[in-house]
Length: 153
Image 1 (cartoon, rainbow, N blue to C red):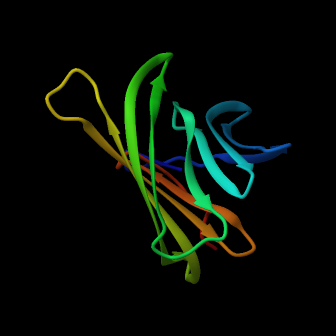
Image 2 (tube, rainbow, N blue to C red):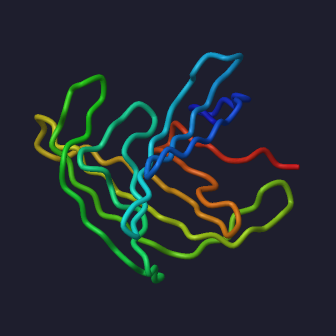
């Protein structure tokens, strides 16, 4: 994991419980971060990532999938139980990512999240998710401060 430019080696544990898909990152048995996704009714959605929860979950993929698909979302993003009105625009595209020296064709999902706090303009946070054949959700970036990807060989 990359946190504000610092690489942190973590163990990744993926769990599937019905439609709920959870990724837990831990260091020495202590939970460091948790991501929650929903896989249901032909859609794949993010419910929480990097300590932020989305109500309702934000749609990342809607099958059948097409390059250039866009989705809009409105709801609430919450950090430590403080809910804030938010909206998002999601764009699906193709991308090639490199892990170690191995190039992998992927689906790139970019979410531009707008958080409407008591400001004249919303705060904007970008999240990017990469899905690769045979791997599924492969990599994610959350703003400029947090990212998760497999260790290169």
